[in-house]
Image (cartoon, rainbow, N blue to C red; front, top):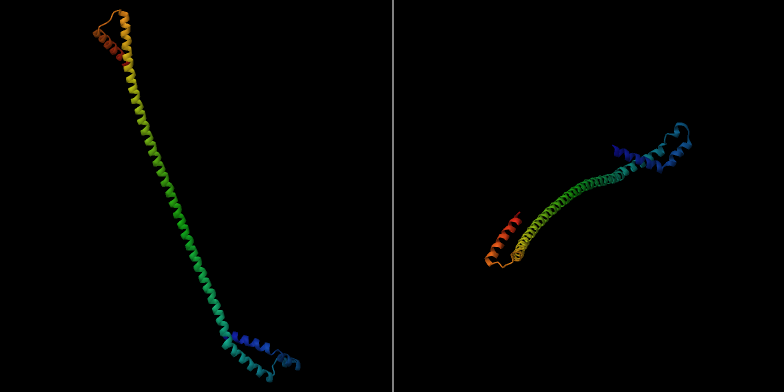
Length: 198
């Protein structure tokens, strides 16, 4: 119905455009009601021309025009569908990038935490080794001090014994026998040892 009406409207417009002088000519020749009524000798050729034009437009023009409209409509629908698909794909890609970014952040945090744990473990290991080495050095120093102390005491005891013998010889005035020397030295060493112990 719409197709036929559209064809009819197009045909009427074409007939009016082709024959404007016929309508005005009849209006000038007579007045009153005859001015709006067409004359039969002009009406029949106009009707035939109108019907031919209407048939041509209905047969060829309107389908072509309708096909162009449908093609344009289909092109717009396809473009909208492609745009929607591109939007969905871009949103999916954006979500994928966000997910990858979160994974990268998580991995970076894990790497930093692992590096911190490794650093703390290395620091603890170095500290422990340093403490062990320091303890060993202190122990060696103590042993060396003790050795030096014993050597100094032994040397001091020998020196004191010699000095004691010399002093005793001078005090007594005569030479002591080896046996007497030995007894004096042993007694003095024992006394010096007891003083050192205190």
